[in-house]
Image (tube, rainbow, N blue to C red; front, side, top):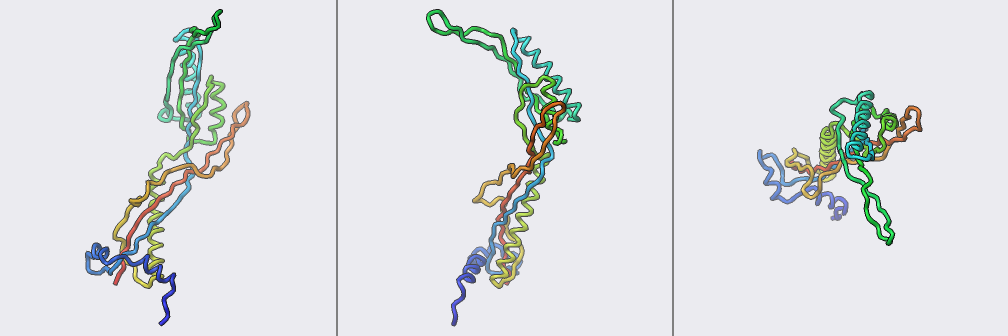
Amino acid sequence: MRAAPLAALGLLALALAAPAHAEEGREDGRLGDGLISVIGRARTETPPDFASVEIGVEVRGATPAAALDGTSEAARRIVALAAEFGVPESDVGTTAVTLQPVTRQIRQPDGTFVDKADGYRAANQVRLRLADMGRLGDLMRRSLEAGANRIDGVAFGLKDPEAAEAAVRVAAMKDAAAQAARLAEAAGVKLGRVVSIQAPPRTGAPPPILMAAPAPMRAKGRGGVAVPLVAGTIEASAEVAAAFAILP
């Protein structure tokens, strides 16, 4: 009698679970004596559908009012510019307003230094979310003409990230079913219904949503140097642990 190939024995060891596990899924008397347990994986890349940026202004003044008034005027012009670009009010929001005294060091005749009041510094930061990402570079360039002197936090995202996460979990479950079908065929057994699903698997952490390989995008500012932008794609990954019954 010839010994079974090691590869075949390995597949059977993966496919057939302990009989005690089969008893847990024997609800209608039609399940067999084992389970096929697999982990399905999937990864998707989705183009972003909005861009966000924080645009601000920082002004120094001799008095607190002078400094704050300077930032307020510029912030109003930035908000008006956003409306000109078609940004709805719901996608415009102030993220920070600061006011603080400024000092400078004065050297004394004896060589020591003392701090002396030197006016006030105020800042106003506005976050804008732009659906027309091709105009983001123009918006950033035009904001300088409106009085902005700070640009921070450029990012790209999805308005409905839950939909992308749900889609990648569905793809992971399909991968699990395909793996189970291949194992059942290799082991010479008949695959039954799914008896358990865990998403994500208990041993794994929830998959992150992150920026994937970028795709270049350029937007030219009116009357200035083109602002290079990279939108990229939003990458989502998921794992699903699933167990399928083996039919008799």
